[in-house]
Length: 287
Ligand code: PMP
Image (tube, rainbow, N blue to C red):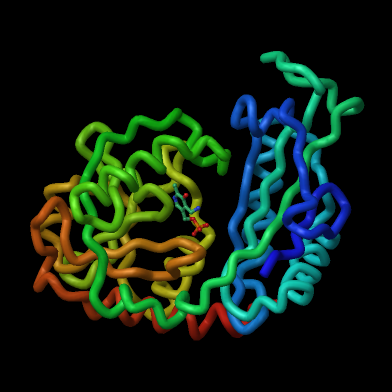
């Protein structure tokens, strides 16, 4: 069944939605994106995603393309028109199509951004079987650019990272820079040692995960110990537990790193508890 998608102010059948070959998203990866999850037909952490989108655009000197209210309305319409109960809404905004190729940014007064949103249905997000068995990750060098805090569509290296993981029988890759873990290819990385939750501090080196912010807030509220600091892959292999967070996986245990079992090699108690708390709390504020 074909989806109804959103393109530049219009709701269209997915087969009718077309973007120019000169679009800077296509030619230069000159675009930003967000992924917001939907549970029971409601948006999780919409506000956080909208705020981060604005920030990404500002950092790239892109004109604000759509108001937060409008954006919320488009998300809602897509949920209704596609009858989406559980899944994600993907949003991408590029610097638009100047009808030619040039490294210089086009004048934003003349070239409007391209705005695309579409739904992805996935009835297995909450009841994801991986949450019960945990994920395997492999480590790879972090070879991305230096502004990973901006959520751009330059996803080739993360995509290659997933392929490397897959080729080694793992589920994902954790990226390592100067001996320290930065993050997963599409998620933030954590370890647990002696009941302390350890995750890299925010900087330009990692994406400021919306799920990360929520999970750390809930962990603090539950009186858990949180340490925001760098950790090495060796420290991770010797940890009691490991896990990741992202909008689409929520909190997901990691049970094996580079072939070495983490802790017992089974999902840890703290990761399981955080997943439970995250789903419970976040659903209360879903809109
Ligand atoms: N880091 C990277 C590199 C990501 O791509 C993502 C997911 N887009 C995250 C972290 C997690 O961010 P969020 O919790 O906002 O989905």
